[in-house]
Amino acid sequence: MTRSPTDGAGGPRVVVVGATGNVGTSVMRAFAERKDGVAVTGLARRLPAWRPEGTAWVAADIDPGGTALVPHFRGADAIVHLAWRFQPTHDPVTTWRTNVLGSIRVFEAAAEAGVPVVVHASSVGAYSPGPKDRFVDESWPTHGWPRAAYCREKAYLERYLDAFALSHPGIRVVRMRPGFLFKRESASQQRRLFAGPLLHPQLVRHSLVPAVPDLPGLRFQALHTDDAAAAYVEAVMRPVHGAFNLAADPPLDAAALARLLDARPLRTPLPPLRVALSAAWRLRLAPASPDLLDAVLRLPLMDCSRARATLDWEPRHTAEDALRECLEGMHARAGMDTAPLAV
Image (cartoon, rainbow, N blue to C red):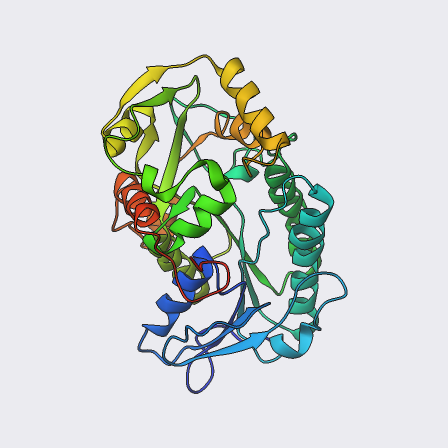
């Protein structure tokens, strides 16, 4: 008989897979700050020096052929799966191996261990192209943008979880679909993953960015990572299932980015910018592929009313506040004492 996350003496036991990254560190901290006896174990390939009070750590690798996961999951009341590999974008086989095949290992190990709750980090990137002038709910198709590896992988796992939920009706499956996630401590990691050596930290400040490209379709949603973590905690602790959109107001566009950088929006045609980005990516000067830019320009805007109503969730930060904090963190070379977030 499976247990619910509210049963058992001493509170539930939650295992966070991928606990040292941008989202994982916020989720670990959010659980650690609760006063209801939640026991939290973080799984990571490289154990951190950072240890929130009351948490435990285990070295584990989700890659096929990696660490056996079932022993670490036995007795857990919930698994929060956050592990994800963004690089190398030039080798989609490698990211597929970790992100898709590794995630499937997590889900199957959770089922074998008898874990009653699985919360998975999906993404706005799983969604099919959609509107920029209105908001879509969780019923919008999740076929991704097929040319971008990140979107393909997120969309594939949505299909896999459709079948997984049908095959394991006793497991409560939750999928979180956040927008872009920012916090100060993730700044160095995000600069490495998405900007690379072309963006020196000292350049991320007012007066040094004269203009922001105003591209067709450049309107997207963001969220402070700590606010996303609060939603993950509620998804574990409440008897909910299914998908939840997560984003803060307002949607960000070229005008908002220009305000944050004290710059001006400059109407820019996409083709020449894409050619330049493609050349930089092929020369390995830019880590983010042009296909990811194509995906961003096609992402729908999400309606987050289900999370607000069902999880009783409300972001504490605006989208502009979250991005401002990350930009300031880039300039200050901010990070954390974990391998993914190290400066």
